[in-house]
Length: 236
Picture 1 (tube, rainbow, N blue to C red):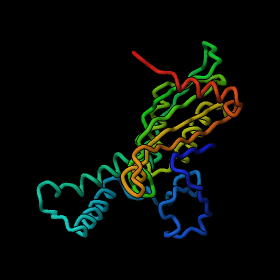
Picture 2 (picture 1 turned 90 degrees about the vertical axis):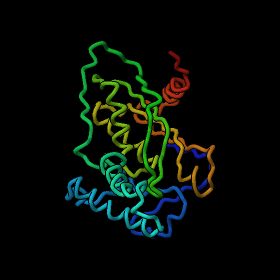
Picture 3 (picture 1 turned 180 degrees about the vertical axis):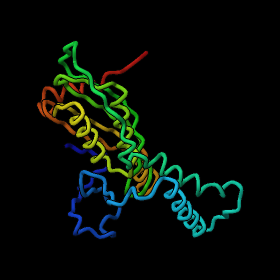
Picture 4 (picture 1 turned 90 degrees about the horizontal axis):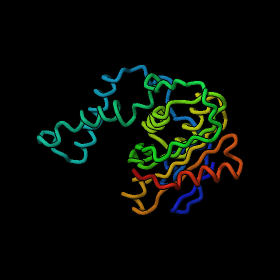
């Protein structure tokens, strides 16, 4: 996988056993290719989680000095709790994973298929701020194909988690490889991180590009063809 950042920093990689909370700082790091979810993550149902998170948000707002009796804000804790559980982080729950039916490639299409400019809405797991961008996904069929909308749904599902862009890119490729039964899958994501754009360095111009190339996409010629395809301007 290749990582390019407009803000040049040397990535820091640590094993879980050596990580301390203060080690993170503002550096962009991740510890493994799977989301760090506990085994008991789904012991509570969604409504119980919403009730607990609502109280936590109330505590945060009260600590900040907000008046929770004000008509504008008194519903905020419940709205935030529902948003976390039902929307922003719904992709943590395996039960919400989209079905990915495949079909025989009866028309014998043997070239790469590219779905570009797939909208990415995710959340940085370091500051819980939005990641907004585009994903470009491609594969070469080994006998089966997947519905085009399923590629968008896979991107959306893995995006709806506290995420790191590198991990998200890898998860999209790994899922499609499993669904299609081929290593010949690639994904590029170009996204803005509001943890960089709206706080800290507050650089509103920079974006982060990550790429994962599997199978034939590791060949320079195939990789370049994929890159050329996503540069094409689409007009209707």
